[in-house]
Length: 510
Image (cartoon, rainbow, N blue to C red):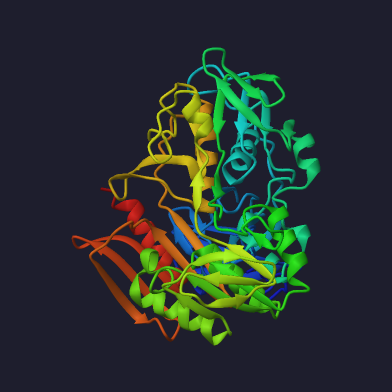
């Protein structure tokens, strides 16, 4: 999904453009000093920022302007037009900004503005915590560390991860990277030097055994203790493991980490036949990636159609047809019974050749630490609107957090990358005493070959799906409704409408 929008196009903004060419609320792309620049007009004000999203390079001219922000059409990152600051994940880096001058009826863009050095901010609670410990090196943990330093927090940050790799761009592990279309250089969220420069004590390959709530200490597997003033649990989820005979063989994989993706890539280079168990998003993205690598792929799943539980009948039929067009063979209403060195035996009695097997049969939230510490759980770690758990000073974010969602009116838990990043950032603010409720609308995207599916909102159940456009023609918007109320919107190539749906949900909370 990464794009390149760096080639200068449009007018040379150093020479200026006519004010009449930029109507109120309008956007225009030009260039200044060889760099693409987006102009946005809001009433009498005109803003000039980098034209490409800092996440995957999405064209912001196709995005949505709301108040003094611009939102990326691809993955719903949001930026401040005044400062360029990345306000919402998945973007982490700010946009460059340029000075703007209006001379009569012309707009001229001057030099790139220097980013001001932010001053340390005071805590709304009066006193900053001296040490914040983050347990987890995924989306939520990294976003919390990054946001703490962006807020000029001066205290100690200890980030403990049981993964051996630096925090990575996990969505890419089952998409472009697995398909061989993204180099490994893209995968780390930040290079190793970022952590040292920002005073983040990143401890990789380190397991947390317990939380001593009374002593406010994290207990490591080797017996060492790390004291905290505030603690964030961002332990994520782990794949459900197969328990059938033969599931422990070296050609049987799950996909969660960079190491998992590397192992699948290494084996796929010599594989002719792959079997994917499960028609989940992960399973089908793996299927698409392996087909891109030229491997024959069979998908085995118990349901009648893929993704129907999440996206409904129409989109489920489309996803199946899309994969079949690309050579995937489905075995639906079936499951794997056993695995040997070269075959999978199905419950129906059929056998499938398999040089490599990937199980995408779901994940489970890693709540053991919280449970042992006496923190309230219910199919996840229960948190309030500020992402604080039942134990004061301990927060949870990401795949483990079950929070009160103002849009559905229910307590929900969502296993999506962007949600985890946004919650990590929100928890960081609240650990600094900001008392900001987490009210973001859940969002995720999935990639199947060259077809992106965007989804905003959250619908665990619905009674109607309204289809706008043509699903088969890959130009559609689906509204998932319950009791006449829109709970979620799924789109294919209707990016602006997806952004508008997100904004509408933000403005019309339960």
